Amino acid sequence: MRITVAEVITTHGIRGNVKVKTYSDNEMRFKKGAKVYIGDELLTIEDSFNQKGMMVLKFDQYNDINDSLKLVGKDITIEEEDLGELKEDEFYIYKLIGLDTYSNGQKVGRVKDVITGVYPNDVYVIETMDKKEILLPALKSVIKNVDIENKKIEVDNLRDYE
Image (cartoon, rainbow, N blue to C red):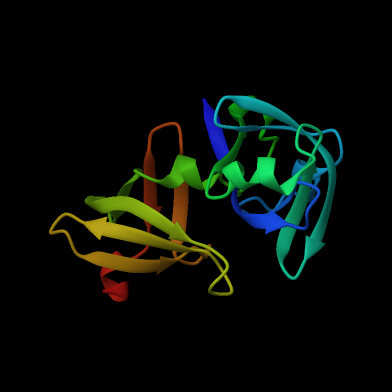
């Protein structure tokens, strides 16, 4: 399974570089020599640098703006086994989406999305059983337990956030 780690936003210069919006906080993900996919094409990163909050990537396989134009709007993916290990109490977003949400022992909904980078902490978007959305801060005082293996999250008093 491949995981999306960035999206090509535009070209950068005439030598085939592209600007990407990254979805990864692992800065080593885009280092020289790293392997990524765009579609089924395996690409090698020749160079990378940060410019105004976006990464600029140069792939070994692309040396001209006319060639790299076809990459705009496409996702950059990696193999799931290349994601790397996380610290305790950290989770990959794609593994949180779809988890059943329980409050006080009762199933109240499911994780629909995770908002990152907007608030000081991540925010879980919970779709309740009656199709309402609740924005739930991803704080230890709110999220009591995340059990990826059993596909469930336990939260404290979800109704306080309605």
